[in-house]
Length: 284
Image (cartoon, rainbow, N blue to C red):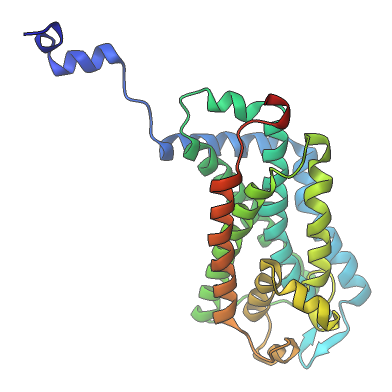
């Protein structure tokens, strides 16, 4: 009989130390820390939350009371589009820039050397992003209701559409943001590299400009990316049924919205699994 067999199983576990917490538990703890850190950074929080609301007020003040269709103002169109833009801004832009900075400063390399499960890091980031996204969308909807007569959904079907567009859009943008975090060569260029294409997408996807005013060939380009479909999905939630005539297809394409967002989720997951790096270019 060996020495190991002489030691009772309970004693062997005590010698080895307590079991480490799993990915979900560490992810929730990481998410709590991320939220606390985000709320303490007043400058970043004010910029992220106030900029879309300020842009909505400015655009709405200039164009908001023009009629886009019968019973629909341009301000209401802007509110739905800006809500979709807020989801993309927080999930894609914010997450991509955060991870790029943490990678270049060596934070990810140090985390990789700890017992933290890799999934725990991403769960924590996802929790922080979802909390911020819910708050931002709620703020933009509140501005639309206060200034542009936007109304909350009145039917369970529209609330359900709001839920699945929000979830699919948030997941798709988060995964693409994680994948895009590897594009900047340093933290100094992270904001420019990730924000530049997203600003262009917002203009051609119906966020800052009514989508029916965008040239047809740019509409085709926007249709490749999820932001256009998120904007259309949210317009179907907050605008009357007659506003569907403003869409290129003349109807709310819920099936295509779900299909495109699901495709971006699948593609974003593949990109994350194949391209994500824990170390920066200077780490070798």
